[in-house]
Length: 383
Ligand SMILES: NC(=O)c1ccc[n+]([C@@H]2O[C@H](COP(=O)([O-])OP(=O)(O)OC[C@H]3O[C@@H](n4cnc5c(N)ncnc54)[C@H](O)[C@@H]3O)[C@@H](O)[C@H]2O)c1
Ligand SMILES: [Fe+2]
Image (cartoon, rainbow, N blue to C red):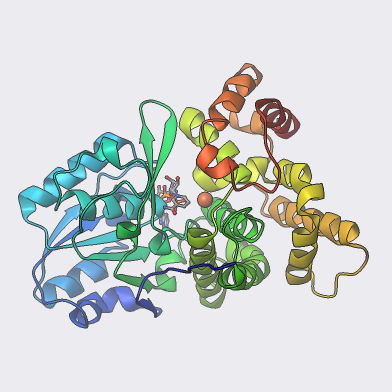
């Protein structure tokens, strides 16, 4: 089978890079007007300050847009793009978690285009070029820095994806010092999100290929062996850099071999209850792995080798051991693991199952078909 693997052209991995942002950008761009897309915490916490200072010293005129909200709603995307246009931004820099990076991608597209945001949802619907785009993740989770995907909350509760090659950044900077202050619960949830990207890319039904497999397995090895250290010893820079590298590799994997039912069932939880993206993945992960176990057994057995080297026994036994190992890792992060722990009313499970069915873009990649009744049974088991 022929296949294509695409990713961003430049990835710099450098602890402390934020304080040298001016010099790093000089490799590619002449100083001009740059818009930083971020959220308020990253400004008030002082995390962004060294980067800002370095850019200004290098001659950049900087505008900071810090109104990104988690699970960004479409009106935030439009407002940010409007600000970029008014400022005359020449370069867009996403600085933050997946929410900030996803908004930055769309700002880079919209600032230079008359196409309406509504007409961009789906796959390859974006027309024309975008402004130069740099991404700096401050969580080790979404891998958004290397994906051609933006997830936007549309209406009150629905999360919709825009997938287009224009959303690949020009330059990615991984600076692990930015992530050492991530609180344990955020470290755990975002790290589990990254593990799910690697697992779902590896078992994806249509576009899985040797290069996405390579990225996914390397990602899962790094993530599974560093997650608990990063959760328990946040200032361990080596573990933090491994998590950042793992989440980036997982992003490369699922950018080319898309995610599936875990994400499809997680999105309605984010949409209705604002449960953070990584946590909503964690809440349904174990049950979806069990649901997939038979269909995905050969792949799960291969992944068992990664998370528990030397695993032995039949394919089914290794697949079961893989699922148990992932569930145990998730349990050791100490996140409250049942839907009921997060104030999800039991009466909403049917609505969640109906909404999950809207995510056909993702469900079609699952190793096994998922009906609405299946989705409901998974939510009930996770309740
Ligand atoms: N584009 C993609 O490929 C892709 C993939 C997966 C998820 N997503 C989307 O990404 C979003 C989730 O992103 P996320 O999980 O990175 O979280 P996020 O960007 O929503 O941020 C969550 C919280 O963490 C805080 N935070 C970020 N960095 C921090 C740091 N270094 N220290 C302390 N706090 C910090 C933020 O201020 C925010 O309050 C969702 O909207 C999800 O749908 C996108
Ligand atoms: Fe995700």
